[in-house]
Every structure is written in structure tokens, then in C-alpha cells.
Image (tube, rainbow, N blue to C red; front, top):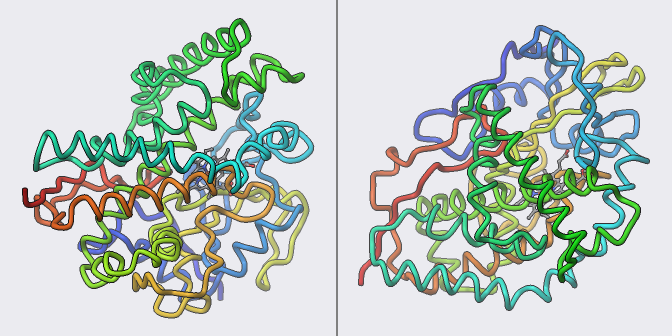
Length: 393
Ligand code: HEM
């Protein structure tokens, strides 16, 4: 018989802010693939097994195109020009290709010193103001936001024009009306920005891209996904990651005692938290998968979070173990849409976590753990809304 999940859970188990919701863990227990009905009533599938998620991501018979998503009662429009996350090749690679060379591990390592400086500035400001602090506004948000702004050539002073808007897209708690308003405002801001870069190119990725055959409309779309993907994900990893470390004092002590553990700790936090929880793909033809037939035109939900907690792939998956050696998590996805910014995010996390722990050896929560406000499960990117912390002075 086929296990069925009627709706995606909207909450995690109380007291378990890091594990996938009970319904998803239960679905995986029944097998790697479950029947599922999309909110618009369309039949679909939910994939929670690591191997199966990975194989769908590597399979060209599955599409990421927005207009093929068969989840609501009506047809969705295609992704706007430049927003290549929801496109297939060759369109997708038209946008991704000119960016790849600008986001390599080597290029990102060259940014390390600048990222260290930005982190130091944030920590200095925290120290000056004194405890308590909200780690989200003082640390987790500004670091990746300043970094992506500098990389793209967006004046950080302009962040009010887009940061709040992008928060609105990502919060999972916004009315359609507010979403549209936020989207329109961001579009207007980015149109002005692209026009400014064309008129006066500066030393940044967006200016470099004006020297190609990409149109202003396309550049705007690229800028939007880089901004949106570039800070909300990393900001949530930094804040939720700190929360997770503070809830696992043994692991935290081990990391403090042995900074060479940092790279591995970052990978484990990525796996364990999987803040980019799930994405969708649509079958272009009938596909046999895990003994089921996914009919052409059917959309599958891929739970990266549950796949990263698959006990067949990661022993004791719900245990945060910074020394874990098994690697290969899907927190950045897999295949053609593998996160473009993964090396940047890694450098940011390595630098920021180690500097934070070094600067505040007595860092701790300033409220009971149950009172830390979490994003709802409906948010695209999971995380804490704020993280009140304190330390000894
Ligand atoms: C794609 C996660 C940071 C830019 C993705 C995907 C995931 C992901 C899971 C694949 C989506 C899919 O399968 O459809 C994360 C996480 C991050 C992070 C967890 C932080 C820890 C960043 C940063 C940037 C970025 C800093 C900025 C450059 C992108 C872009 C894509 C992407 C442009 C689309 C790639 C494509 O469609 O070809 N990210 N990301 N990400 N990410 Fe990230």
C-alpha cells in the first residue's frame, strides 16, 4: 500500500525546533516516497528518502520550470527573465553560466579578509552596546547582507529598499496583497539599480554583467535572485546555527576547544538544519521511481530536510554531531541547480561562527529556549525570527 500525506505539516513538534516535522519523519519511515495532494487539490508525490531525492535532482526528466508546477488549480506564469532558479536549460544556463566563474571557491576565498572585517565590525558594535542583544539583527542578518551587497554593487545604505521586502517574501506569514506590494517595490528599486550600473559601471558583479548581451529586464531578475538567495539563507543558518550550538553545549565546547573542527561543523549544521527545506520538480514524461509511476505533468515535493535526516544515509540523523564524517548532504541541493552561492555561504559561516565564539566565550540565550520565536513551517526558508542572547562583561 502507498503511504499518503494529506497536507504538509505547518508546525514542528514542540521542543524539537530542529528536526523535520513528525509527519515527514513518519512518512520516511513508511518509505522514501509518499502520495501527496498539493494545496490546490492536484495529486502529487512527496519524496523524503535521500537516494530518491538525489536521483530526481540529477534526472533531466524532471523540470524546475515554474509554469509546469502543477500544484494550484490554475496555470502559473513562467519565471520572469533572469530568475533562473525556476528554469531549465538552455534558458537556465544562459543566466547561470556567466555567474559561475564569479562564485568559485577560489574567488570566494579571496573575500575571506573582507568577510572577517565585516564580522569584526558587527561584533565590535555588539560589544559596545553590551548585552543583551538580538543576534539576528546584530550579527546574522548584517554579515551576509553587507557581503552580497558589496559583491553585487548594491549600496548597503539602500538596504531598506529591499531587505524588508525580501524578508516579506521569505517570512511565510504574508498576505498575497503584501507580497505583491513587496515584489513591486523591489522590482522598481532593482530597475533603477540596473540603469545606474549601465550608466556608471563600478567594480562588482552586476556592473560586469552589463557588459554582455543580457537585457536590463534579465539583469534585474538575476539581481533579485542573488539578493534573495544571498542573505536570507545564510542569515538563517547563522542565527539558527547559533541557537542549535547553544542547545548542544557539549558540541559547542568541542568546537571552541578545537577550531580545526570548524569546516566540518559548518557542514553538519547545514545538514542538520537544512534551512532551505524543500523544492519541487515536475515530471516531463512518465517516470518509474521507487516502484511508483510518476505521471507526466505531476509535481513532486522534495524534502531536502527529511532527506538529510534519512537514517539509511545518516546514522542517528537527529543527533547534531560536529565530528560526523559522512558528508554528501543535500542542503545546497544537487544537480544543475546546485546552489551557486555555496562557497560564499561556507566562507561566511566559517568566519562568522568562529569569530562569534572567540569573541563571546560566555554567550548564552537570554530567554528560555521555548521562547525563541521560530518561523512557521510554511516559510520557504526556516529559521528564528529573533535570538535574544547575553554574555558576561
Ligand atoms: C540555489 C541553499 C546561500 C545563490 C540553491 C538551492 C539550495 C540553496 C538548496 C537549490 C534549489 C533547488 O534545488 O531548486 C542555500 C543555502 C545557503 C545558500 C542553505 C546558505 C547557507 C546562497 C548564497 C547565494 C546563493 C550566499 C548567493 C550568491 C543561489 C542561487 C541558486 C541557489 C543563485 C539558484 C541556482 C540555480 O538555479 O542554478 N541554494 N543557498 N545561495 N542559491 Fe543558494
